Image (cartoon, rainbow, N blue to C red; front, side, top):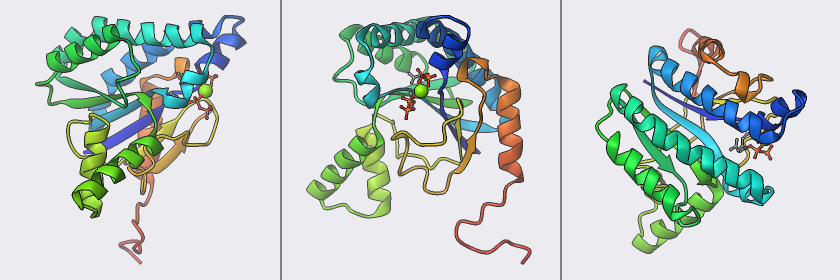
Length: 230
Ligand code: IPE
Ligand code: IPE
Ligand code: MG
């Protein structure tokens, strides 16, 4: 079973290259989410974590932030029934106290509606900052004097509303050409395979996911040990 995480980057540049406003890219980006969620179970992906909005993204111009929030709400409202039908369980990970009440309600509804999904756990990271979550997890760990690795993983899962311990990432994909983590899943990516592609997120589809998975499966993950055959 495989946990894939994706930094969905490049919406704005994709739109600008077409002479369109950044919002146009975000709208098309939502279509890529649909395609990837649809394709994921075929690749034996059981957990898919998508970076939708970082805590630092609050620093963008207000109109862009509100478009992103509106798209998110629309996605949750329009997709929940289909996700449920496909056996997808949705969780939104990150802070909720800075989201509008309407968005929080949409999140809670979508999570409740898809709770029984067993084919794929889809985690959408919204108002997400890996560092802030680590600080919160460590604070809770210190308060309860539970400071082992598994305690941190459990408390990190709790701090992000993850519905369980924070699962290690097997493969991290970033679209859009940049090669950085941008405060995403710093703890969980300790041994993640990293895959960077120049494909912009609105162009990303099932075939790109298949390519990334094929490369991932061909890699030798040693976890600090030596290869089996040597
Ligand atoms: C990713 O695309 C979407 C979010 C970060 C919300 P960007 O909006 O970062 O697009 P670029 O990277 O500026 O092209
Ligand atoms: C990371 O992309 C956040 C998301 C994809 C949601 P950014 O576009 O915000 O990251 P930087 O600014 O290039 O590091
Ligand atoms: Mg970007």
